[in-house]
Amino acid sequence: MSSDNLSKGLSTLENYLKKITDQITFVKKLNKSHLKDSKFTIVLACAIFLVTCLSFLSNFTYAVAVDVNGVQLGYAPGMDEAKSIIESTLGQQGEPLGVAAKTNDEINYRRVWISKKELRSNPLDESRLQRAITPYFDVYGLAVNGEVIAVMSTAEEIDEVLAAYQDYIAQPSETNQVFSVEIKDEVAKEKVQAGLAEIKTKEEVLEMLKAGRVKAIEYTVEKNDSLWLIARKNNMYTDEILAANPGLTEKSILYPGQVLKLSTAVPYLTVVSKGQKTEKETIPFAVVTNIDNSLPSGRSVVKQAGKDGEKEVTFTYTAQNGEIVEKTIVKETVLSQPVKQIIAQGPRITYVAANTSRGSGSISGLVWPLSGRISSYYGYRGGGFHSGIDINGSTGQPYVAAADGKVVAAGWSGNYGRMILIDHGNGVATRYAHSSQLLVSVGQTVSKGQTIGYVGSTGRSTGPHLHFEVIINGSTVNPLNYL
Ligand SMILES: [Zn+2]
Image (tube, rainbow, N blue to C red; front, top):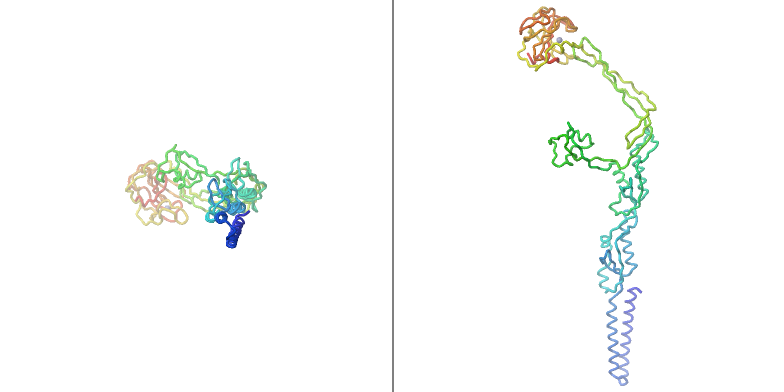
């Protein structure tokens, strides 16, 4: 019997009793003389009491109290109503997954006799239930080597994510024919119970697999390490290293043996793929050096620029996590041949290096060997390198030693024609070229300002001039910085 029916019944009964009372009163009026007053009064009192009781009872009802984990959350008019409210709550909690949630919470239904007013003011409320009930779902965990690394709603979703990840690693394409992809780890789909927050979407799990597991490692600083180098070695940014090591700054001095905290990403899965790839590869150009006696010693000019060639290579491979570990070339086709780089190099005059002194290179007060207009300066001139300065003069005009020194070479020397090389000590030497006549010989000591030869146009020269070089520890420098 529902409470509605009960109250209806009670009020019917109440009305019925009222009618009886009215009838009694009527009968009493009619038969006043036949009835004894006392008897009538008792009957009347009983009737009034009964009516009062029934009218009081009609304000009460049976209801169902619902407790979650021992806390009473409200009343439902009946058991069916109570259960359907709980079901609807779990249904709503599972809405994001399209299934009803389950709960391990203890839910108790108690039949209670309460006032209608209390039932009205404490109804079983869904939003209150949502907060009180902790839902769970029967879902699937992706277990790798026995450890659940992610939870997803269905086993099919796990299969789909694993397939997508294998595709991401193997990268099949028109030029990469994948024969097989295999996960080397023990992978299982385990039935698990999980809350909504733990359940991940396919996209989330795929991103997680791609990113790998971040592992904290310790790094011991080696000799000559720098923050930048350590970051490079460990695939990190210097900022990340600084963040992981409080107190360390860009200006900190690292010492060998110092231990730094680093983090590194380790893949969750080991994917081995096999296939055949076709790739374009560069054929590096060769460099050919020809000695060119028209160039000054030690200088070189690019006569023909080199150009890389290209070839198409087809190979079979085995790759682990996308990195090729085994490769067998099947076919190679040259698409374009490389072009050689041709370099013309001036002759090496080894006695410069062998016979001149080495030292600080300091010298001051060199005098001009010849006074005249400079017709060519030191440096790159007209496609070649000019290793000295050219001072215009006329054939037979005397020139002088720029400083005190010892003659280490005097005689014919290829493009220099008739040439004198003087060592001034401290690693400093001077050279005088294209002379018509030399007045000194090897081994002779000369003093600053002493006439040592006459201007000419011998060797590679277009007219009478003095080619003057300053050499510091075997390399030419700009003479104008010393004169
Ligand atoms: Zn010159």
